[in-house]
Image (cartoon, rainbow, N blue to C red; front, side, top):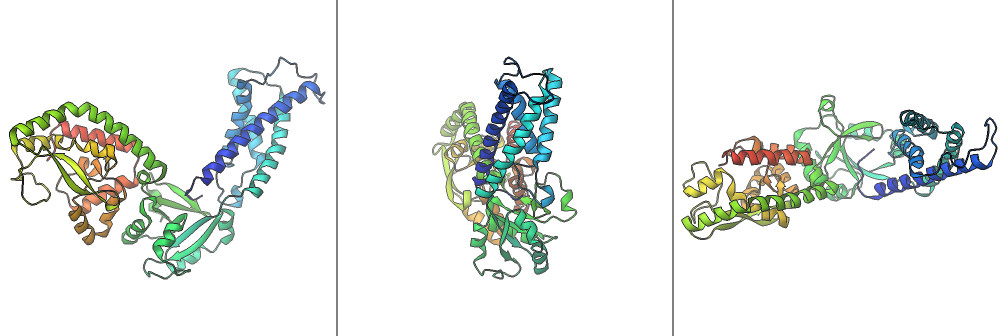
Length: 443
């Protein structure tokens, strides 16, 4: 199962679950009504009217185990091979077992005849519904671009029957070592952008090619065939290509639902932090005005999302004039008050406004001066990967290493953060940043 690229698969799954629920309710209602009106062999009498009413509790008792059984047997996932195809012969008995287990705990009597008739009707109706679904609305073929050497590409596409069963079609074969050598002769970047998934099928993926491929693919990233040692890595997200496991490299907080969730967290968090720290911000601004005069605030150009420049707000901590470069611990440009503000990170509080306006995030790679970012990227192209996400008020590198770390070390921290993003990680980094500020460990 590859990663979904659009909402089509999600819509299909939600619709399937909704109709499964409706059919489960109808089968239960039909079974109850049949037992109340028809004499069935091996039953002592018809079901009394007051027994097993079709209320919400009894409907949930039958339908929820049905949905759980369908999910556990694979009806809501894309199968990887013919051996893993779900079957109602497994799902329906599992539903019966779950219902039996529940009634033992809640001490409710369910007529066995109703259970059997409901299961029989579900088997017939759900079987017809699944046949109609698969013939009238089949799963869309997923378009894949494969990257690797000739032998690796040949091995990956050898079992075409398995790929067809998984609804996968290979659109192009690309070798990053030989640019322009692929099946349709089109531009590699456009081919990759139009594909549902990009997979590197080389068993040994070197660092250079992995970074190049991530630069081509952007935040969505790519999948790769892991070596035995890479298969031991904790926290790796695995998918299936044909019948082979593949690992995922992506920046989940920079695209799709992850980006929406991260942006919502930024807006709420920045609003709360700005309200809580506004007294300190106003006091610091007043002290700067009284001791150093105007301007109190500075708006410095920084490289933002996708390299677009933006104006980052800061409290002024240095004397006016002088070349614009990174500050050092004993920087002569710094005022005494500015040194104190930097020590407790109070000079960065105005950047909460940048977070609210969408130029920055609460957590992410720290923004570099635009020209500095261009110069570093020219010498180290992978440095541009930091620009796939909004720059942050706090960053993993800032809470984990020293201020004057090398650019390569900084990039390592930033890529680790971007490819391991979660809200829990953002919260942890924010807490560490607050602790660092309160302890006065800033520059």
